[in-house]
Structures are given as structure tokens and as C-alpha cells.
Image (cartoon, rainbow, N blue to C red; front, side):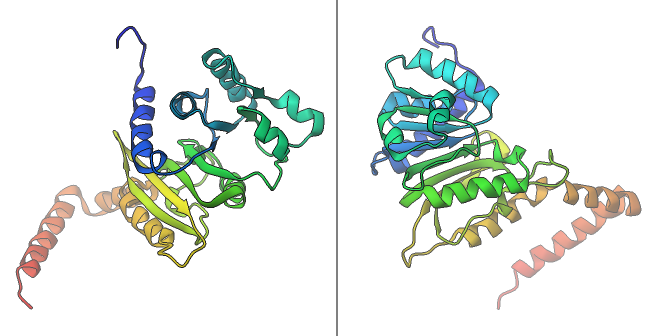
Length: 260
């Protein structure tokens, strides 16, 4: 497009960015962002280019090599803090955090507790982690978020790459989150787009209620649910199952028309 190469993944990032810009960036001062599992930096690039945000990227070493290369090519004038810098003190200090523009680190690094993040992001990578790893990242997010900070979580309703189901509805949120946007992700019906805001005030704090709603939406994608449906069809046959479904549907429609 206009001599620029675009792929489907970048178009998705642009659409997410457009939503975030209109819902958050135009109304709030987002000075720094931490993206967990950001790959080669495609999504973070949009925040750097359009809002000159400070970025902390946390990912596996192989991904960090790619993001360091890609973002250095895109932003050669930015100050980069990489793992070599970290190993000098074996800690990301608040002073270093303030003095660098782009910080790229592997998981489990020692981050100064005084460092506070305005906006955390995880898109399509927590669903690949086991529950203990997800829990450790949530501890990081909930400890380092500023009050009234934001968290974008875009992940599968269910994915099983760890030996057991990992479901976004079961992620370990504490009670101190308000839901801003919660909906199936753009052009990806198996993924949910959940944008929340950290708060300790006596406001709605409706995250637990919304996780229940997400669970209801996601049930059709739960593998255990699909297996149960297959077993029922094998035991009773497709025709009988269809007959029962049609019968229940007719009863439901009649009940809807009853005036109380």
C-alpha cells in the first residue's frame, strides 16, 4: 500500500492501536508502556512512532534479539537498554528506566519496585504460557501499575499447549480492575479483547463479573465442551440430538410469548 509492505498481523495491530488511541491515549498521559511478549516489536512500534512513548519490552531472549534489531533500524536515535546493560548491576533501576527510551529484557529480571507503568500490554502470548508463568506476570503487572493505569489483554478463550487448558476467563486478576472494553477481537473470533483500568477507589471494580461473562462467551471454544458434544452425538446419534434441540427450541419460543 503506497509502496509500503503490510501483512495481516500489522493491520490487526493498527486496528487495536486505533481503538486504544481513541479510548485511552487521547484522554490520558501515557508516558511509558510495558509490553510482555511483544515479539519483534511490531505493536510497540506504533506507540513509539505516534506518541514517543518509553517502552519496556519483556520477552524470551530469541524474540529480544529480533526486537532490538528491528526497533534499532526503525528508531536509530533512541537510547536502548539491553541485557548487557542490565548485567552491569543485575537490576533495572528507576534511574536507568528514566534515562533510556527503549528497554528490552528477558523474563524474571530484577526490576526496581519504584518503577511504575502507565500501560501494560499482552497480546496473544499469555495463552502460550503455563498458569504459573501467567501468575508471575500478573504479579508484575499488579505491583508495578500506577493507580488508574491500564492493561490490554488479548488472548484465546482457550488454548492447550501446556498439557491443560489455559483460559483468559481464568487469568488471576485481583479485584482492583474496572472493565473499559470487553469484546471478541477484531477478525479473530477465538480471541478476546479485554481492556481494563487499575483502581483502588470504591468504583465498580467489575472485573470478576466480566470474567464470568467471558467464560460464557468462550464455552463454545472449550475443547472439553467440544469433546462432550461429540460424545453425546456418538451415544445418541446426530438425528436424535437435532430432534431434541429443535424440540427444546420450540418450547423456548413458546415460553417467550407467555405474558406474565
